[in-house]
Length: 120
Image (cartoon, rainbow, N blue to C red; front, side, top):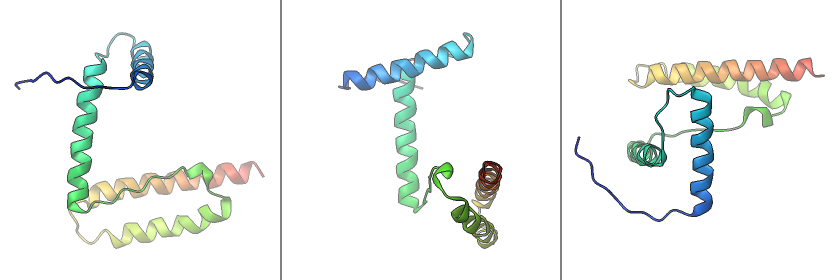
């Protein structure tokens, strides 16, 4: 694939944060990872374009910190995830990915409920 060099301005503190993360990844990988600032920027651009395509298609993403929910809220949320999974299992082509995400969310909720009950 042909490449093109670009020049960009990036704040120093952001570069320092990225460089710290790169160094952390390199130290954890035992020399098996080739990563540098260019790799991170390319990945960020690809991710940005992917997210924009999803926005154009009407894809909705939901992110939250599950450990911020109370036990009662999690217990209310648990059956809702099952209902969502049932609703979307009507033959959508994205069903496999949604089912996987719903399963992971359901398991995360169950585990968090377990942890909260154990700490009572």
